[in-house]
Length: 100
Image (cartoon, rainbow, N blue to C red; front, side):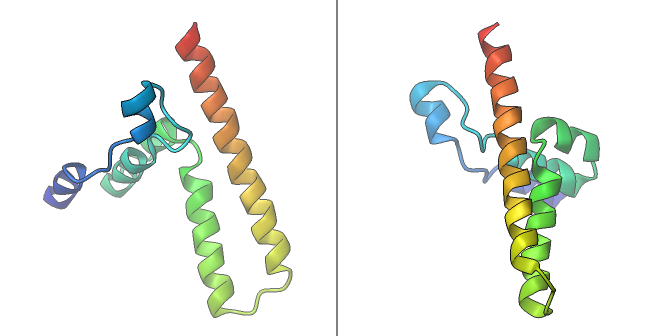
């Protein structure tokens, strides 16, 4: 618990938000990861919906480096598109609700 509180002191600021006042598509990832490490799984999903699929992608890439997985390139591409789609949809949703 003390480690997580210490991590929050070292989170990087979003330059896009500081300069333009609008969050970028990556905003919330660090806080989401912090929630995830703290065991707040639902809060992690609410803050950054792509957190779990990104972890799946990174885990699969690591596994494909270690093990010979059939069709690993196609699976990586599918996971990349899935993550990009989730990030774009959640960012669009966030921006639409920011305007209204």
